[in-house]
Image (cartoon, rainbow, N blue to C red; front, side, top):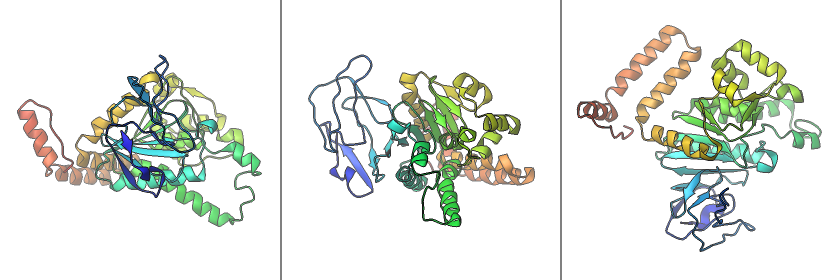
Length: 347
């Protein structure tokens, strides 16, 4: 596979094709696996390196295992930063938070890359589902507390006035956590490791969450003198109830994945080595499903959380009748009669 040289250039999509394996900084890095297979690529000053060795598998940034010679991505989105990478494969947009030395703590470039990726996912016809994950064995540590300390606290010596900073924070939250929650396509979080603070909020804003046994969750805000951001109080209260959410916010205890699954904070726990592949398989199934129905289904479910009953019933009725007029519904009904799996078109 040879990726276009545009990958590190101007923002936009770049198509992957051909047979020769070429690896670029921040995307599709092939690394040694635990069984000793030789790496087929390495990163050096942003330039590609070509190798003729032929291991059976390699890893991309998100940790998803790929057979060598198989396309790493159908399209790659230039986020404009190394702090986050975005690719689309099999109709699934995978967004990888990529600051492993800081456990993928948020940075301004990362946030802007996430905003751009989600804005594209919302309207892209080749994206049917979104997976948010982290590189280097972590999901996201939330805000960069070390960076805050070095700057003298949140905002540091920023010349921005209080009102301007509040406006920017509100916009960032709505364009990231808010977008993941309201995006008219299924969103999934894959947690290979810790999710803390605002990182946990991002995970909770997704429709589904899956984790490896190594992951832990913690609100963490009380430990650094914060009240919480990125919608964590909203999402957690609706997932597990107000009383338990208050306990986890006030005490900031670490929650392992056994307890997280029991509480309903995660939908499932997969082995570390297969997490990314397992989550991608679920996302691919959703991307290939009745996407019109999923869009209305998600709107119904979101409205059910806070809407009035009669309003929810009326919305369900309108959406249900509309779905009944789609080609996907007619195909599914015919497939049922013919005792076969339906082939959905998203229309």
